[in-house]
Length: 321
Ligand SMILES: Cc1cc2nc3c(=O)[nH]c(=O)nc-3n(C[C@H](O)[C@H](O)[C@H](O)COP(=O)(O)O)c2cc1C
Image 1 (cartoon, rainbow, N blue to C red):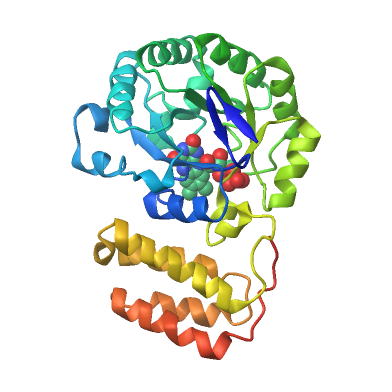
Image 2 (cartoon, rainbow, N blue to C red):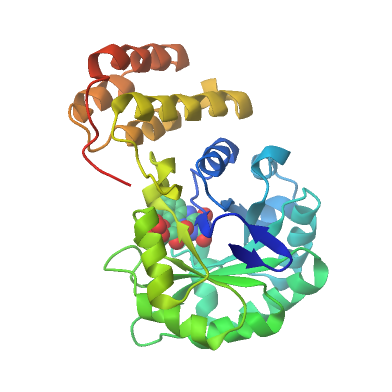
């Protein structure tokens, strides 16, 4: 069991924040398949304080997905504290602060991973937010700026001193982006250096991998990102089902949740690419993906997916967990 502040989670496996993916329907699906909690896409502090329509759509949540964490990004301490207060009014269980995103759009304004190069500013942000909201505040970081500046340990200690309740560590540097491999050593170094829970992150592909990371580094939980796409079963011990029928049923469940929670007809493009993820690495997957991509609307997409069932029900997926 994972504990953060006064909260307890049934599983230590957590859905990592993924911009463009970890919306309410996908979070509900991952919770149903066993994620201890899920983190929203990153939410702009400016979007929240200006009350921007598109930002406010991102703070959509329902009781059924709880516990949930909403992630905030920005680089101005006062605006971040104001935004955290607004975010708290939407009743998430935690607020996560993004100090690890390497994307230029985010770092050019000093936010995300850039904050690891300005620890004094990061400290001001965390202190102000922890003072302003009563919810547990967590922070997601990288190992450092680059291989010559592995500052994750000092940074994590600073965050703990600010009142942060847990730290998620992606074991890559800012300059690595998503290249190379995630370093497990920085996760164990940080775990040894702080008393609050540490979540390891990076290149975890299965439930088994996640438990191995906890055993090897001592981390308290694991965040899984890319391996959950098209594979919400990654949070369960059984892993991805072998049979096509179960995979199709998972994809259909995701589609139904999107229809229930979002204006699905307006997002057919993104739904098609999410559905394609379910059929990756399966025999005949390229034909299925081509079929999905030619759908012109939601009805066509559903018809095409329904049509897969009889032809493919005997197929076995080629990958596990
Ligand atoms: C498409 C995509 C979107 C992401 N969006 C966010 C985000 O909004 N906030 C964040 O802190 N990290 C974000 N990340 C980083 C992931 O949360 C995670 O740290 C990274 O993908 C490594 O974990 P993984 O190997 O399990 O995917 C994103 C990564 C990807 C690939």
